[in-house]
Image (tube, rainbow, N blue to C red; front, top):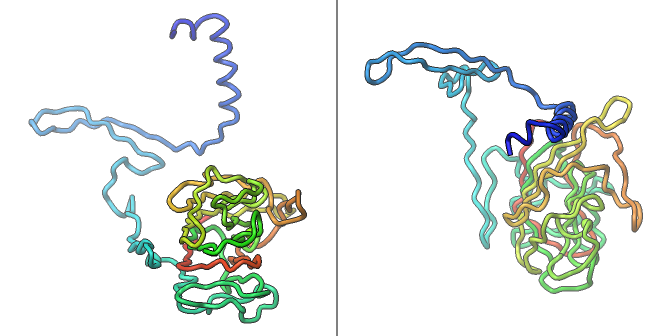
Length: 290
Ligand code: MG
């Protein structure tokens, strides 16, 4: 096999496939330096020991001034039937107590959403809510439950949504045995990306989204220079795997969504009122570098 690859036409084919790949690959290349030092081993014998630095840091460097350890974050408490709690460095957006971090999206007034039994939910015609604080790239944890009593079907059943930076929707829908267009079912990046699997729990059961979002970047001329990316884990199951959003995903009609529209570095988190009483609990966010 080896001889075949290194000879004749096949060799040429291999070469052709290697060169374009090399041109396309645009990795950040680390600066590697290596050297050999003669050192005494456990038996008292001299031997060659290889040293290597990657971008100036020695492999297995123990000096904290040269390779600082990651800071300590006390993790949160995982939810069971009862809501858990946020990690120590998170911004808590809803802990079951009140809506002081949220306002109505349509008029900046206090929202008509209500808090009941440690959960929050929309009321009739209350509209979307958004956070007072704004965020860019982030890790978001959110728990939701679609109505236990099933009413409606398709997009009309347990519909809500979480909008990162107020723009980019991860769909919330009761997609348990409920057919709809796949790019609009639960955990879809609405209109842009179908989830890898349907990991929905039954109506009325609590579900968890853990979302890692990196915001898009724009050139001064409005062009996108870096697209938004989403990784979404629903109920412990990977449903969006570092997906690059090909454009905006706002509703433009039954078969069209928005494109990217330049915006600032941060935006509010929004939750949708789609006329269905979807419950939320244990919402927290950690800001990330872009
Ligand atoms: Mg929705």
